[in-house]
Length: 419
Image (cartoon, rainbow, N blue to C red; front, side):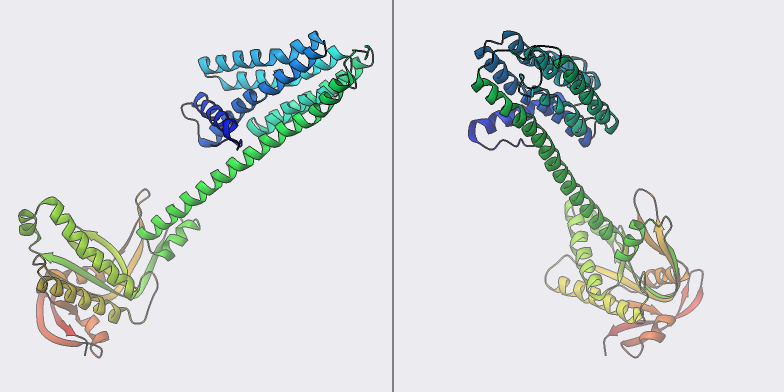
């Protein structure tokens, strides 16, 4: 939090004062809102001290020594109250005491000077108490202190009518005090509210920044449509899709490669390759589901159904394969992967409560995994269901039948390239 004082030396003093207010209000378990209110309470209590001293000196110059003693007691009472707060760390007693001091001292000055007119409406300073309560106390306490202010004014009016208003204050002093008693409380009230609004604006900006960052992070983890559904309050996100295509890509010889490379080199290699894969998936509008070790899973047709899901995913697999080949030809670490694609129905949804994960399940996913594990390094193997959808768009070579664990004999094809 920054002070509202903008001129040279005053700005330095104000900054140090706010640092002190922030330091003294540090409390275990307090959130930013509580600390803001408490620091404003401390800051406002100290900020009134110069005005109290000036008022006291004016009364001294006017030879009103009893009246002068009352505002001059404010700095002493405030320092004692602050010391007690700093020692015992109890804000509510500090708050109540400070507001009580702020409410009663102007009333005592008014009585000492003989009434409203003769005191130059000094009772207006008591208005700082309910205004301060609005800013840094509870709504209920703000009403209490406003009622107390009204009571003080009524009491002052009643008692003021029974005492003499001939206090002998010179005209210049009375005029100065009258202007100060109007402008002083107004300035304090305006300063408190302006600072509170400013700090709230800063807090809301930080809140919006954090919310945007959280939303961006959520959209990086989940598909945008799914993230939107979660933000809208959907507790369960689960959908069934009749036609999706699923791609598995798995690195060949990763165990041997990991033993030859340092941990930093291995992680750097996977990050480089999978980052390129990410770019390819984004370019073609398919959904990266997960990476697990050296395995990369992609789905097309989720969460948004699309008629060309198979064609899009085969294109992605070809570009991934070609990227690895170019990388190898350009002197990169020799790296090959098997690619397997299958098409069918699947269920997709979000699992987890702390670490969300969008995943796909079903026979289509299992068979895609078998297409990869029974595949050939550097080649894209597709099932018969996928082949039926892409045969007119890509050059494919029949591999024949292979024995797929759990499925028996299945006909598969290798995708060579686009026609």
